[in-house]
Length: 203
Image (cartoon, rainbow, N blue to C red; front, side, top):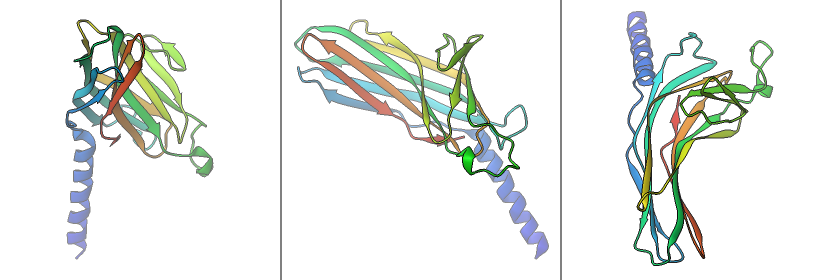
């Protein structure tokens, strides 16, 4: 009986680590909406992968690491009023679910978690350090990490990310990420913005 329980425990432990390390692709998704002046505006997120890895500091209970890949694209068609401006933005929302106030004194953790993303060009979110994005990720909140904005050329544009390193430290509990792509156009009479989101993934 004890041997059977030991084998079962080992199997669950190995499968859990494999699920943690394998990451995986997320389905491509597009959203199309009509603007007030007749334009069909499309936002697409594709090629999304969130590959979870064991943190280099060997502290998986307070540090989460992953490599992110994503393409955000979009465009507009079939309208009549001239488009004066159009752009595509893409990135990830990152959330830390633990509330540090509820932890016991035995847990060594500060009031905020630290997030670092290595992606040039760096985006300033709370601070900029040597080409990486750094932010204070408050427990119970969501930080929007925008990797950039590309203006339309001939009615379309896109941004691709491959193997961007994400590290969240000091968050005891669940860390979740969710991709997004935002497409905006402006005409003389209307501004229109369309979003598409990926599935939330836990690190």
